[in-house]
Image (cartoon, rainbow, N blue to C red; front, side, top):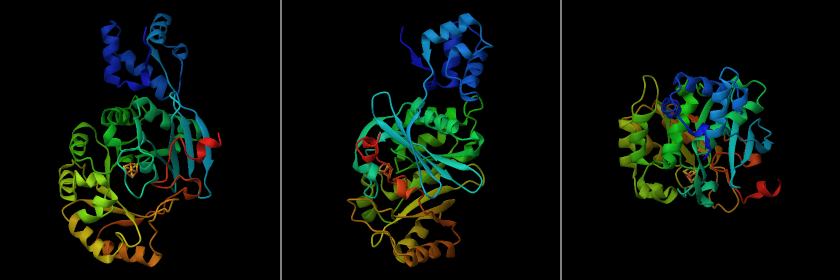
Length: 348
Ligand code: SF4
């Protein structure tokens, strides 16, 4: 008999399985609550199910979990979790402290095919997509590591990988993360960030309600073509048109991330172009000064340049926050996650 990881299944799919076995479908919610609300990893511990049902489930399904093989703490309070997957690959998640809560940045792929020039993950290339369970288990593992799991309130899909390039698994994981019998995160507190896979932005808006962030990083196609090769397929006009069509609940905005790189995209005229581009949108902007890494020729702009760029945006009434990436000292800052063959593996 083939065993399936039950954490790869949506509640509907599991209810369908119960239905096909002539078992009341409400049992699906019961099982999921054991798994996601009580962190139970064995059917034998589900004491409100009959022994026969527990035996049947054990024969059909496994309940996977991920345990970190290494946790690195940064001086700024953030933590990087390294996970070893069944096939020997590694992924990383980063826990970021906010004033009163934690945000977890999860990975959606091993490596990434997008090749953004300012990103270390992109340099390693693409290895494989993550299963829904491998995404959800990053959240479960970090919750288990926290003294107060409820302090983890926000999830961002900004780790390794382009989430929309692993669409089906990511949507399944999003449903599990936000559903009442799943991990119960508020959809207001879950954000998916994309490099701009335009057709999938349209799909995402139809399939789930989460916040959208777009990694923009340039206000003209010539610069963006160089920084983000995906722009050659889906240029800025197509990307922003998809953003205009994205269904936004009231009072929510699309976040545009803009990695500021010295001499490349950090001039006041770039900021003015950005203002023009974003005008028709409900938008806020996160400015992320570039995190230098070995082998990159890019540099972080001077502080005055960063502030001048921000001022152009705020003068035009945009919320534009300068995000100092956390975890730079442990290779956990934005765009610095790297898998498998980096130094981290050698220290295990
Ligand atoms: S920035 Fe994101 S989409 Fe671009 S290469 Fe890095 S991980 Fe991939």
